[in-house]
Image 1 (cartoon, helix red, strand yellow):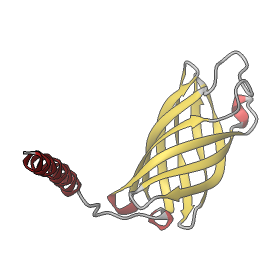
Image 2: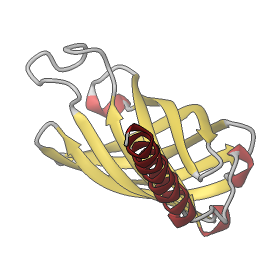
Image 3: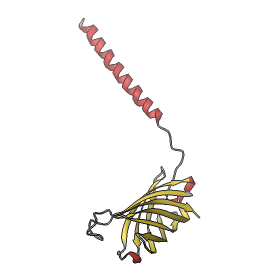
Length: 165
C-alpha cells in the first residue's frame, strides 16, 4: 500500500509539474515577436515638432524644427506660447532608441522670453512609420524648487509629435 501511495503521489507531482510547464510554454507561445527594430539611426534628418501641455496651470503650445544626426545627438529651435507669453527657444541634447522603438532624450531648453534660466527636460518617445514620425511625452526634470519655488516640480508637462520633413 505504501508503494502504491508513493507511486500515486509521485505521479501527481509529475503531472502538476507537467501542467505547469505546459502553461509556461503556452504563455511563451502567446507572445508576439517584434517585427520592427529601431536604433538611434532610425531618427535622422529634420523633423517638424508640434505639441502642447502645461507650465504649472498655464497652457503651453509649441512648434519648431529638430535635427537628428542618427547617432544620438540633436538640436533645434521652436516658438512657444505659455499662458499668453510668446517667444523663441533653442534646444540641444542626446537621445537613444531601443530595439523595440521606444526612446528617451535629454535636452537643455533655453527660453529667454520666459525669464527662466536654461532648464532640462527628459522626454520619452516612440518611433513610428519607419522613423518618419514619433509621439513624445516630456516633463521638466529640474531639482525641486529650482525655478518655481511656489510650484511643486515637475512644473512642465507636455506631449506632441515629430514628423520627418
